[in-house]
Length: 258
Ligand code: GRF
Image (cartoon, rainbow, N blue to C red; front, side, top):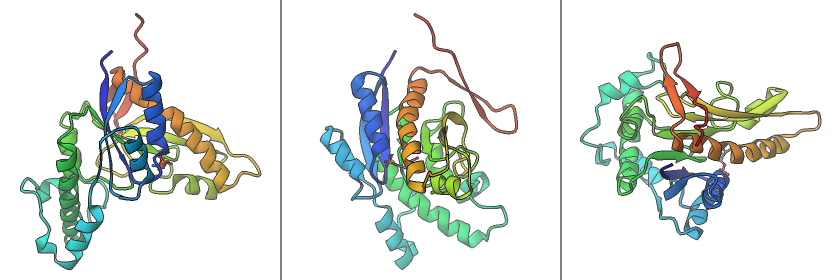
């Protein structure tokens, strides 16, 4: 089986990155991590990458946003940015959202995403792995990574059993809603928020006495198992997308026997 080259993006502690690095080292995951990038210069995940001798970089989302808020015209909008195309595809805002706000949002996003694209384009990678990367991608970015709809190239882990509780705080939403089961989901990234085709999920019981902290601890422990397992399925070419129904769904092909 060929090795998969993966790039990983983090915003925080990078415990999922660590689980992926460990799986690569142990041979459980036939992959090489070719870069670790972050929008947060203080992300501990960058330190994990450095310690492992992996190239790391920071993309300047914060600086670009600041420049945009001071003088929108001074922000470098990529020459291949097509606002109408992005607005036609995006599924982050309702269709009746004010056009002016959509223009500002997606123009700024494209400027930020171009910076990220420039940094990752120096590496050769098969799969972009979001491991606690707290930014949403617009169609501008997604289309430049996923050029064949049948083979998406961006994958994310989410701290809830999607499609329940998309957004930034899945374990809190799960706990505060009194759910009796929590979990995590690995999915391909599409034009919506945490709405892409589901690759794998793991669940845990929430029992009397559990707190938000214990729920997070149980969930993260499962994430560290689930993410390498799902990336392995990509490496083994075992995921098939079916877009014939209301939603695109993923079928996992059985393991091929030697
Ligand atoms: C995880 O809970 C992941 O599901 C979510 O962000 C958290 C990242 O944790 N997207 P870490 O940085 O991998 O420790």
